[in-house]
Amino acid sequence: MSSKRWNWSTIRNIIAFWIFGLCNNYGYVIMLSAAEDIMVIQEGGNVTKQIQNCEDHITARHCTAISTGAVLLADNLPSLFVKLTFPFFMHRIPFVFRHLLVCLLQASSYFVVAFSVNVPMSLAGVCFAAFGSGIGEISYLALASHYPTLAIAAWSSGTGAAGLLGSFSYAFLTDRSMADLQPKVALLIQLFIPIVFAITYFFVLVVPEDVHQPGWNPKTWIVPDDGHEHGVRNTDDEAEEECKDNNNASRLKVPQRKLTFIERVQLIVFCIV
Image (cartoon, rainbow, N blue to C red; front, side, top):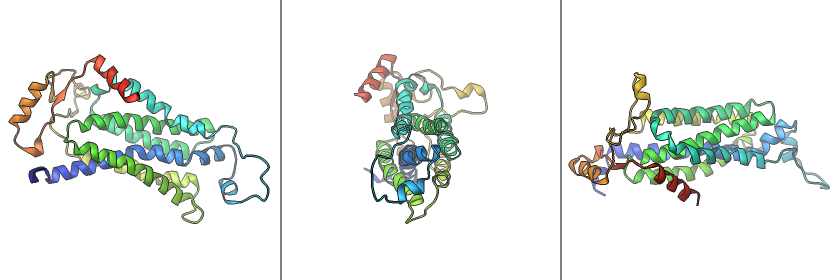
């Protein structure tokens, strides 16, 4: 890779996509880590009593009226629904709006679960995190197509780090031998993640010119469905010609091609399989 490509803009974009991958999957990991605590607390149990005291004789399994598997379903089904349906219309929504929606859903999930008064409310909060994660995944991967391949590598690295850092942070905050905080407090502390998530797009990422930017005019709040608008081309040849004419690597426009309805369905089936 030439030294020209390793400029400050490239470094910022790599950092931004790493943070995107980390923050987007962070809420998903936190909800899985807190699954048992969510069920125990909402059913009137004492988390400390159940996980920190050993019993002399075990005569039966400790079960909750609603299995922690319900949290797993609530953390996966909404994301699956998003991935199956949203690609057909999500391309008309500007990336900045999608980003704000993802951050809002993630922050809402922490608040709802932390202050929930019953199991359905807790599961609704988990669903918020799942919706945010699903929308974020299809949005940031689509956004990465406007950048060199290093963006995908950074995103993948960030999603992997989310599993490690998310589970460790919740364990650290709630474990008796460490911070020994209540699950409610631990969830509220995690609210700094959506804040970092939000500011990364505006202050770290370098948005290329071919990404639609909405303005104050409501007409700009929908991405034009025109193959020749905002860097999107109907043919690969036109996009390649534009790339050849651009000698400035820091402002390189990655060729984009408009997908047909059938092609989108094929991609969805391919991803599921």
